[in-house]
Image (cartoon, one colour):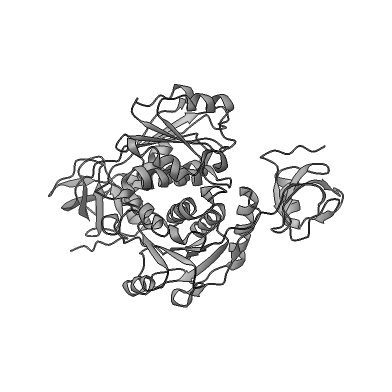
Length: 254
Length: 254
């Protein structure tokens, strides 16, 4: 009987998951389990696919080129994904990887890159971003894997009419627009409506971008404190406030 | 006349800063300015020392082994540091570096490592931590450089009697203890009292540690949402909530 604890490897697979089934793992997963973690036949893993919840499984077929996993019992039912869009100006390499991980941990359901006037990165490796999303979901115990959308110019990104845009304006001063808790609390009447959190690039938004954003029908503009935050810190900060005031940090009763 | 913008290198120095003075830069700073940024005589830098505010300066003595900087005018007066202690179980290497950077960005005034039952790291390189604090302060526009305290066992860490302990309990469920905004709002009557935010190690707190923490005189226990957060994400999340509800994100009028 394999042992399961918080160190048990957690793997995303594409295949359907059901009791008694067997799932083939890919070469990267096999390599990681065999050569990094030194695991083999009979060892415990957890499986999820974003649709069928989370399952206990044990490694099998140690002789084959790639491992497979025999599915045991279901540990958790599939949770309904949050409806929280994270809209962001892409950063370079490691910083982007990090920001993507953070957005997944914070429960974003969609990652939407937008190209703004001051965005310095225009070529985006979406495959790398998707791989990062899956890795973050594996590590953070998330059942619903967020979708990564194709990049859009900011002005062409138009959310659905009822989605509340939380516009994090790094040039905003709390002295002028008030604290972010009050700003978001004023949007509480729209709780239940889906949210999009928008984070700009280093250097912030251009003035005409700011004006255009504030003209959108459902928007709340917030400041993120008196210090300059790196974009990945700003991402966590904004998503924490959105989740705590309007999202799933408020507990099951809302 | 040198140009100053958000890309201007910002350097921490030990020496006093006053108009007309000149400050010797150290070998690391010289190497970074000369060989990485390709800067030399006449180029603009910003200087701060944690006491005298932030100053424009221009590089001088290009012939010498190390650069010096001629001090120009003061851009910002020294700000009063926030009184926000960040108390944390140390992590390994890169994750610790990252957590330290985040705590500085979020405005912590003291970094206090504590060794808990499940802390896996016991040897802590305080010099590296202090260097990280300075680098983060340089990059994030912070004037008051947080202090790094010597590590203590958790049970020997005793804050001043009036300091509010914000105990982030990763095993806490929002369904049981309510949302973190409500938890912190209930502590709002203590606004003005200084705060300590406590973040545990991977694997959380031991049950007797939890019991002992909850017996402390001024404590508020909060949950950080329904997902597992990495410790550095939890650090940003907890500090955002503390700053937004009780700290300096509320604007000058409080």
